[in-house]
Length: 418
Ligand code: BES
Ligand code: ZN
Image (cartoon, rainbow, N blue to C red):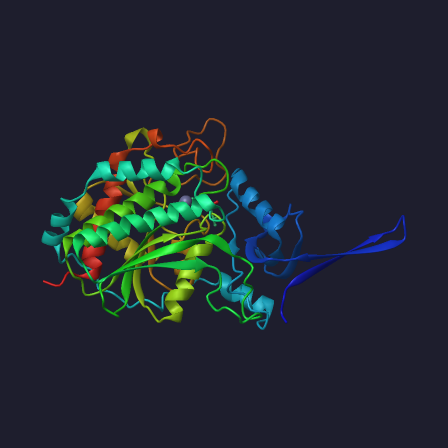
């Protein structure tokens, strides 16, 4: 039995009574120390390096980490929820050092990136219907929330699945499969191998286009929001409807590809990139290869209508990211600039961490370290993670540009069969 229980003994000197609390330490996380120093929720440090710690926390501790991260006054960086990866059989220090070492993309095949299919890309780009994206975003933001542990979150995921089901039916295609990947350990009944307590009601949704068993490409966004009244229009309704529009166009195209295209809506990103972590485990367990990943997380807000498309330099593959710049120059024809999150800010980072080539195109410039400072102009969407992350602040033109990039990515990297 490897159930992780954290025992906290409090010696009460005044009354000479020893009180022992047994509290479940549900989550194992890797977090930068600047984020953990004010933790008052139950936590237990398993190992540390100069900057990071491997900790076990209960739900309260996890909430404190999320809150500390979202205070946002510092450039401290985020934390990784590694509950599903942490094995007690491994020495904590070895696990931690391996985890924070720069990942090597050995799981994806090396690629010679080139523009080969401009006719097909342009043909599909002509099918884009921005009004569809706007209509889908209206529906998604009308859920009270898409929180990964709420019935609303489950309803939103079912709505997405119903949309794709309808697309498949109307296209008559028989090479599209749709499945939910539960946000919990997929190896049931092996207590001890995994801590199965980090479960969320909402599952990630994976749509596979094509029957091939070759290594595929992944295009993703996260469907979840934080808990509370959360329209999540920009974060990440924008990416969610971008991927939904790609689904419609690719499925309707009747085009077949050399590589399977996986369209994924992750659950529980906001809880520490949990849904993508489980999705990657699922892919690995079935030996479903992945050669390239793109993440769309926040594509709708453009400061003063700046059309620049921003590419993240950290937790991404440099060659794949450079190829995104080529795709944007060739097909989207917008300025490209580079920025960095400074931490594992979205689901591309878990793919990178797991040894895959991943990239992310983002709506604007990330906050510089120390942001905000007095007098500094804030250029990013400050309304995310609040009730005010609503649609009227977004640019449909900007969002559509990312959908164009998604089409170019899908066609050029999956390779249409003539
Ligand atoms: N969409 C946000 C943040 C983001 C910013 C993603 C820039 C991509 C580019 C994302 O959903 C989020 O809130 N992430 C968390 C980290 C996560 C590990 C809980 C964050 O930034 O605090
Ligand atoms: Zn997000």
